[in-house]
Length: 463
Ligand SMILES: Cc1cc2nc3c(=O)[nH]c(=O)nc-3n(C[C@H](O)[C@H](O)[C@H](O)COP(=O)(O)OP(=O)(O)OC[C@H]3O[C@@H](n4cnc5c(N)ncnc54)[C@H](O)[C@@H]3O)c2cc1C
Image (cartoon, rainbow, N blue to C red; front, side, top):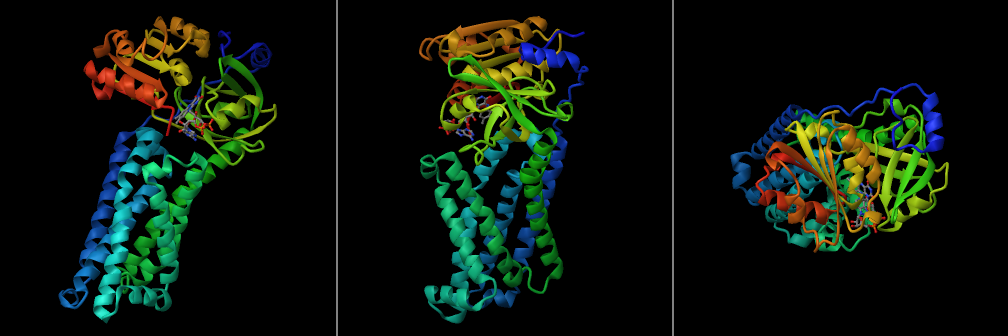
């Protein structure tokens, strides 16, 4: 019989001993080619969108009063809306894309892209109002009034536009920083409503669609498919998985200063495909907690019927999980994250974890082979702040690796010193996990030591 996993404690071990050994299922490997194909499809869609806007006016329409503003208004509207569709796809958590880019990568792209649809759609609203005002010799505001009262779909489009601008303003970094994450998330949801409200006016009035039933059908199909993907992957799949696994809190256990493991019990967990280093969005159905989902990494690969996460108390949610009563129902969304051994390019790795970043490091180690000789560096202020050290030690020993625990303040042990302790940097992939500050500093220190970016993999415990 194989040795008992160290994650489990005495009571759990008895139950585990009675259970047959379980074949672990890893999450499917990332397939970058599939993402390349998806990018090609998106680029072709973009080309078709621009093309349909450019040919929407005849030469005489272009020369007429308001003709140029009309063309530009149509172009900015179509391209802005198309880019918004791409942004929705990016946050739909399409599994084959998420596996390659990770959730942080998807969000990075989502944020990079976001100024474009915002400015293009605002430009669209202004340009088309100017175009119609020029064509009908109206003033700007009078034209707005006529739009709202006399054109089909325009009243809802205006409400949608108002919502859109409000969310865009709230999304400005300095304002967003002041909001609670949950408030920010709720406000963000209004974006879906904004685009749903604006949809009718696009196909009913848009020059690219009026009299072009094929374009109408294709545009509607693209939006319907995007809405379907968002509903399926953000809401449907998490619900199905949560029902399938029926997770409940089994017990909690203090691991270090302010750090608690939450052990969950469920069914069918042998079917859960997850790789070491991945995380889930967890929703605990307890008072004051059910309405928010937070990301926490599995601190060990599943050991059916148990799952474990290990949480450092930094705020309301992470403090409350330590006091969850046994039997609390848990919903999960995921697994997410590209911080897995699939990312490695070299046979050997160095793993660097700051504080509670050890959760990802601990689970990642489980996916490394017996003779993988990992070098693992755990970093914390004091040893008492560091959870799961003994488990990591055992996993490192089993893989003939080396463990180094480094303690001290940031000033005593800066990131440069951490990087200097890592051996054979040219011949290893480096996996870094922990707080945003820690990960950023270690990445910069590694870059100074000329470790290629492709060999550095990281998970920041912040969004
Ligand atoms: C991919 C990932 C994996 C993580 N894994 C772990 C883990 O294994 N163990 C662990 O202890 N922590 C982990 N975290 C961090 C954890 O999600 C936050 O500490 C927790 O959500 C804070 O919530 P709070 O209400 O307690 O604190 P708050 O007072 O809300 O916030 C404290 C800090 O956490 C950040 N934060 C708050 N809510 C979220 C959220 N929903 N998503 C991301 N950051 C947030 C805030 O920006 C702030 O910096 C992980 C974060 C990410 C992004």
